[in-house]
Image (tube, rainbow, N blue to C red; front, side):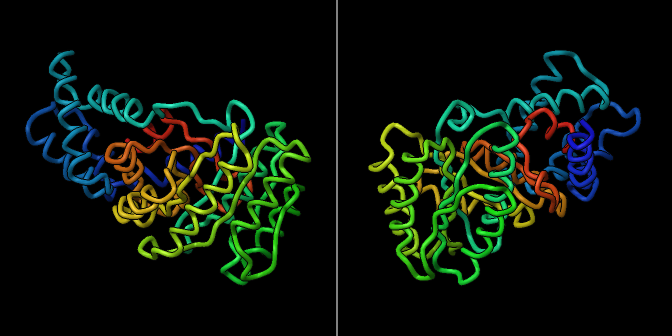
Length: 301
């Protein structure tokens, strides 16, 4: 419980600065809800990187709800907005890895923390009594395999790897065979960090996906895009590009402890329909946790 509270408090401390602290400040005091309130709130949402479309949608939903319930105070309005944001952020579908064997294909641009996230995911699933293994399919970056190997050793999980420059799809092929033979239930696949406008690298991701579908029929593949929270609205551009190649099913948001722009998570869900599956708020091995919509909404607002 102490660790969980520590993680939540860290998240709350960071997100309380969203919109340069404007989001929290708007609800302070006893002022009544009026047009000025809505204008200030919309501005704060945009500064917090929710984007214009998402901010307008949430404001409309809040206005309708407050009118319907006869709410006049900002204190009550804060609670209502938290409820609206939490409902907005809830996943529309179950997460395959919660129900049984699954492949988690981890994708994203350079520097967002994919390899580190895989190490933390392995530790998380071990703590839940699962049997994860890793596929080091980032054969492009010289230190990637070594970095993932260190995480595998720390977590005590098996890793399938080839040499630098090897065909990533071949690594995944061998990992799929080992996954079946050793009866593991979570396969964590690292992939090369890539710029989302590099056509050939996107084609490589498509090839990996085809190998997984062929070699592990019946095992669901969750394609999770790792996003750095500090990139703000640029994350939307990345998510759209990756979604075209990999059939994204969700996102992992890292570095939430280092930004006041957590509103981008709301924009990702609102504009692209992608649920947030995990969030990271710290460097520790336990600082990647399943996303909790209610806790996130409370921390943000």
